Image 1: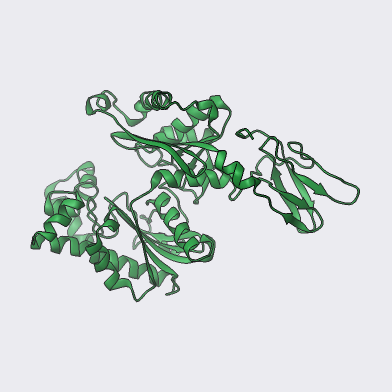
Image 2: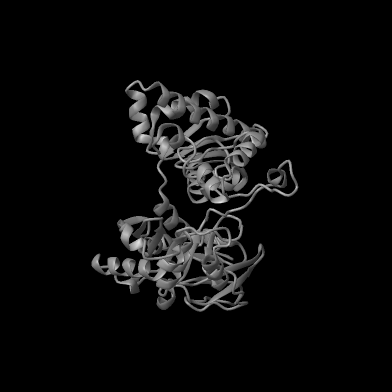
Length: 434
């Protein structure tokens, strides 16, 4: 069986349960249908309406009077053959990975020399340079781009959108170039994914970008109508960790209530209610708990006085709150492995600062439990700090009364991007339009 790509016919099959959207994308896979005198319809032809927005697959044998009659192993076999490239641009590097199904073929972190980055006035100016480096690396690794089934990039600072996997389209490309909510290397993810995919006639996706916004109305309010809370957080890792936790409980993500804490350079703690992030701190701009590089929420009047007394500019304050705030402001480092070593060596200040991070994270977790009315199936810790057993134990001591704790150290961003693309390619999820 050859690899299949987007572009095969789409349509709907009418059943007693309603209309079933279908799309045959795998040449050679047979879709057999039976209804009265109708004997069969073979792949790739499917008759009926052709609604362009439908993206689901049909696999196996379908009885139009009864619904699904049986499901063959064809789906699993086909998914295992899908080859997907993931692109994750960072400030000074670009991570790429190629998977065949859920098996990693290779992954590499392409470091860009400071001198090279310095040539570009804006991040968006790096687009062609980074694209070319990726294509050269694929060639060096022996990856023929014509064998790819899809390309998925990290999502950037676009307009707020619900979570999910999105097809990269012209509207998204325009907003990524404009940097609607700021300039960030992640804005290049969708652009590069599209640049690689479009000439090949395959889809380009992004998955759960940082601007995922599913907040309930209460969560948007502040004490001033001129200022609203915004949802900017580590959505990709949040959603992936939440799906993993739900699967371990034998449930779907949409069936559980979770509190997920991403513990990285920035920390985001969210209430996940039945598949939606209904409350979360703005981790990009330093809101929430004290973090390795974020100041966290500060006393409002004291902050105002500090700004006025020191004549700080907007850019200086932004850097102080996000980048030079939190642990690095107290201990002079944002390397939490170094902080952990200092704690083990008996450094009392390091222990107190790290303990304070655990304390403020625990308070945020408790607040999210209140958002969920105490109905919490699990508390999930993920991100780099989740590797620190002492830190995890400090948090567990304070929050274990809420729900069982699940710990998934690290970010697993590349795997999360691949899984988001595969959910669409496997028909488990519909690709959303931006």
